[in-house]
Image (cartoon, rainbow, N blue to C red; front, side, top):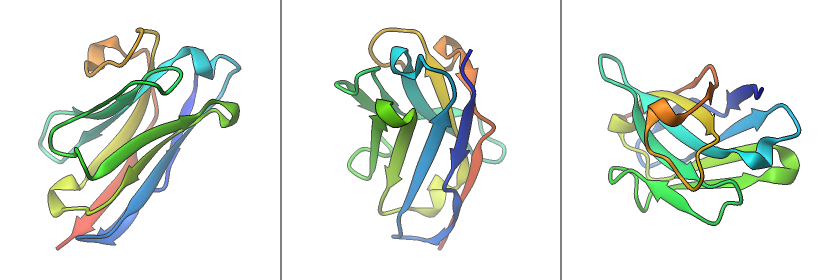
Length: 124
């Protein structure tokens, strides 16, 4: 069982930066690949980025490539999402999730555990 708690959301102007954190409970955090997803109002939840259990492999949605960076520190049971050059279209609730799937996964159905989400609002 893994419990996930996101933090770091807020309101930022376009072009600004935020770093999201996701703290995981349990001693098996390093056994899980992790992902960040987001859901904007009226839209379906979509993948943002994913990282393998050791951090050696990452995946990014085309919309965030070159602007967002996913990373993890297994010793701290934490995964991060550094978001730079933010745009109004990045406004959404951001969720972290954990999966036992090897490597990285962009598919929501493959994730076993989810956090409650943190709101990110980018003003123009």
